[in-house]
Image (spheres, rainbow, N blue to C red):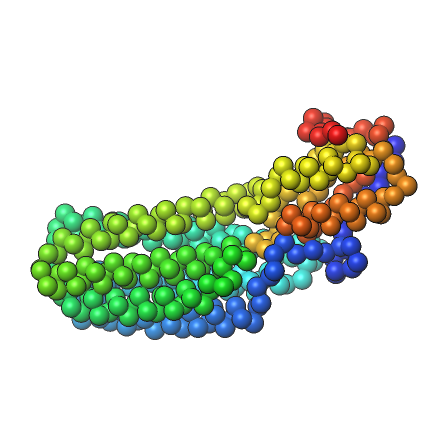
Length: 316
């Protein structure tokens, strides 16, 4: 039995390294993250001070919620920086997986923030309290501008990476929260209907949950090395099945190395070993088109036997 291991090169040699997406530019992201963090820190301090001055629990709780924005942005920025650290003997992929873990943490932070909004809204619904609608509307209006502007910084890059999308959703959700607070403030200002405040809070929380749920599910799946969202499993199988020299393929595994790079390993049974290199190149090129850049293939002869059960074999 003979085995021919085909490993990709790590430094971008001729056939070794394809990127899953057009990777976002680090310099641009750094600037976006730093601007977003600075704006949100300034706003949450102003909102906290205004909340104390007006005795508004709505503003104080929203300031606490905006603190989660800062945490989310800091985590995402750190994840990108850490992911650039070179691989070593203990971390052979480097620290790229940290981007996946941070995207999961950010999704959880969003849902925790929703829980805080719901708890505060229910309390206010059961015991409506007088608040200064005019001040709330003005302060929250500033929040709409700050969060909307910060979200815009990540708009163009949000589909290139899960962490950027998480930051964008977090900021867009907060802009929505602030808009809800503006609406409630204006209504209270002109009507004195304090019950509007918690109702708006519950509606906004519902919208945030719907916008965040997919991010949470996808982040969780990636953390468990599940199939990345941008990879079609059947199309990958078809690539192997349609290759004339491939008789069978088994032990197929596809997972995310980071939020921008995917990997694949597979055992491939060949009918002809005389064109190994061209077969490998063709398979890697087609897999790269499917968003899989890190490919490791083990070629086997027809009479080879795996050391483990090959019950997952896909035959042509």
